[in-house]
Length: 604
Image (cartoon, rainbow, N blue to C red; front, side, top):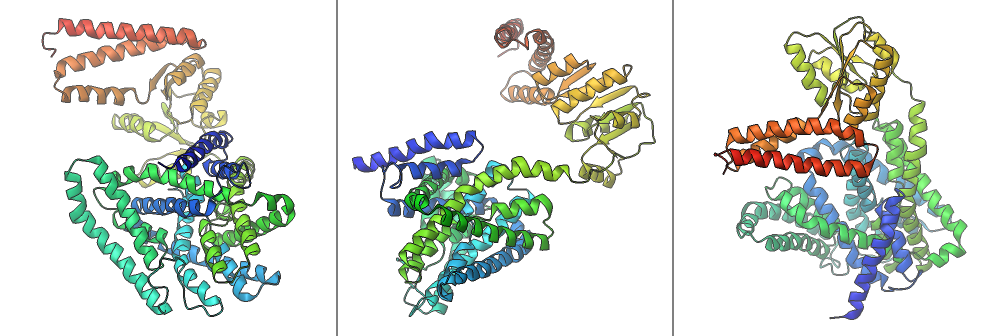
């Protein structure tokens, strides 16, 4: 086995393991960590690895896998729902950004052909970076996530005509493909386009056949490694097919994923490919870091930083203006603009193609590649600064909605009407108990009104809101809000100002139960206790244990847990004592249930 190859693999893994956790520790994201790791081990750093180009070609497969998995997550119905933002928002961003960046390049004395090639390449954003950041922050299903995905998807689609346009810009160009292995490189432009369309249709039809006839047979073998090999082979096959006709492999992989989105084997395929995707994406960003010319950064820092700032400012401004056109205002529009302001991984491919065709001088190509790499590297930092400093200030100046005026006076007040409070409220109302509902989420208030339930907007942690709700004359306050600290604050307010009010609270966990008890609540109930115990009870019954025995044991478990929890409050401020008490309590519980089993003749 090649020792040099193993050494390179070890260097990659060691660099990622050492640097990425540090970046995550400071909330800068894994992507920036991978870039820094690449700089350290690359030619401009410690020089452990110098074959950057060959590594980049392999690492780009991580982007392809990512697009395949994104396609798996999206059903055609969702794509249809996002069609306006994909074509409208994404299309305007690409066209306007290309035009603005082309004019900027021409202002520096470049001819219009070179400027247009640069403008189109820089209009692309980093799909790998943005989607990774959205996944890390659980924002994929939010308004920002869907808008970002729409723009990125259109950019990936736009790569196809850009790959056709760039060769036409070169003197004597005849539509050469971006991929040296393309079989249609010598054909006319219209023939290349037809070949691309035919291949995309072939991928769609092939995906349907795979889902219907081939994958079920593979699944029936019950060999996980065979299904994993099939999943990887599917992505590799689509990539090769797309390269043969000069189409973006990432787009082909995305379409293949969309076709299989409704397949019953979707989850299995996704699980098999996910680890490979993560490793290859990390390799891709490490390769980008390795390719960064740190020497130029040290010798031309002002020029590079000015170019990066200009690129990100132009793109951010255009995206923000376009976002306003699609009613993405405030923090949503600002976050979208900042997320997509960097250059993208496809720019590296387009710069390389432009260099091969003579549109870009080698020195210009290296400069622009470094600009794109730096913009990718600083984006996580900019977003973290935005979330930490801009978002709180921006939200603080937003006009707050005044609490609703509450005229009715009921015996029970429910603070928080989410999934927990709704069940409590429905039960009380069905028994004829009149309740006053306080909820600080205006969307939840509107939803309640649609179903004919009266709710009042107001933050129950505020003393004036509790007074307005009639806490002085009510019999009971049920605290069902999600915020654990807020719930304790409500208890403190109520105990001080409404001493006759009974306080029943939702506890998120044992620690929260302790804090509520110390604050003076009359009764607390842990939100997952009953449901977790019910599931455990049903699981035991389904395995053949006698129902009566398991139900009796469940009651014993519940009684023991409630008693020991209250006893443990005496040790919550001393972790060693608490751990020791918990171990003794577990042994006592095992003894109680074991003794019960010995006395039960029906126990299997």
